[in-house]
Image 1 (cartoon, one colour):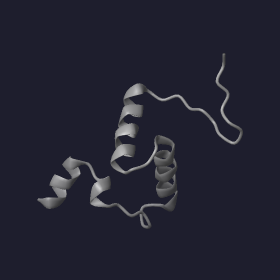
Image 2 (cartoon, one colour):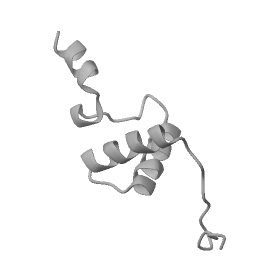
Image 3 (tube, one colour):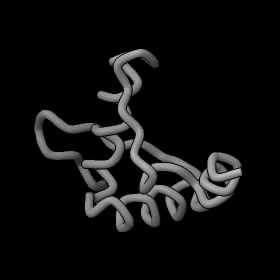
Image 4 (cartoon, helix red, strand yellow):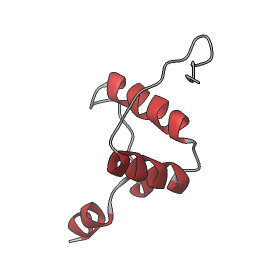
Length: 68
């Protein structure tokens, strides 16, 4: 049996480790994986000058560098 996406949607294939990173970030930001991907694409299309980043969106390493 072949899984066919619901009309208006597409399937993509990504490496398992990328999916695990997406899943972890989605959980931390209270989003689903598809919702996170949509959010990231919306933010990327806004461009760097309009992007808003909160401390929750930043990795622990980036937080340490910002606090230094």
